[in-house]
Image 1: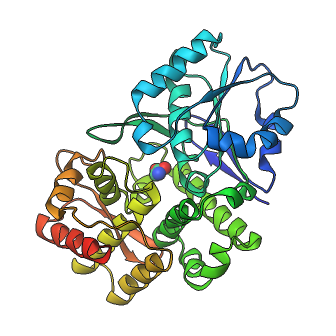
Image 2 (image 1 turned 180 degrees about the horizontal axis):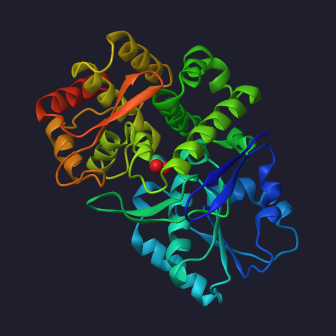
Length: 360
Ligand code: GLY
């Protein structure tokens, strides 16, 4: 199974995609590491602590439980975890192992980024969404009431250990939510990946090993290439936000409780796809194909009662908005996107309305 190199000015590291990858943990611990702190949730620990214990062997470690859930991804919890680390004697040689879904990898990474001005982190993502996106690339952070991930830091891990075998324990909804990030990767960068999702739905949903391992590895290949080209999102990395600007607005408008992140991104990709078509950037047939694949992995929870105008207002608060200009990532074909900042408000509102109408 493959290992991909993520090469950034901050650090070069491996993203290992392998059944049993958790067992590789000792290979990536620095020889002189101090206390080990595992940030995880009760759910993940109940399911996977044996794998972890087998990997870590006789090394002592302390488990920091986090309640999980997007609405808990807040500074107050980061502070609590940092206090607990300090109480347990953490110092600059300590190391965080973020072991869980995207919320854990974001929050655990952020904890490592700011504890004593930065200690190392190893990411072990256990949801599909975290495996194919959140845990790779060094984005860490927490939410504010004003918006998602509005506080955070780029903090590249020492390694990312991606074990597709752990996905078998995911609730079906959670797995499908992660598949939307894989669909995103296909739309922005690789048509063959998109075609697998279009043509092999049953095998993808049934988690046939060869299909799952391939789509995860392909997603990591793309992510490693994009992050290596642009760690700080000044250029190419913006393409990874396809569907996210609209999706973040939906998440914030519903207080991070109604939609899983991947579901909100699915809705956001729908809105962005309508927008691209209506601006004449995307052929109607490609628009249809994208909407068809999103539907094949749906449905997402109903958006009934959500006002298009409220979502449009939220777009301006997204952290990708610069000097009140929203930067939209828009598909121009399947496998390529552009970033466009000068989009007038009317077509944006219309695209939101169309996407809302599809998901009642
Ligand atoms: N999740 C988008 C990025 O890593 O840039």
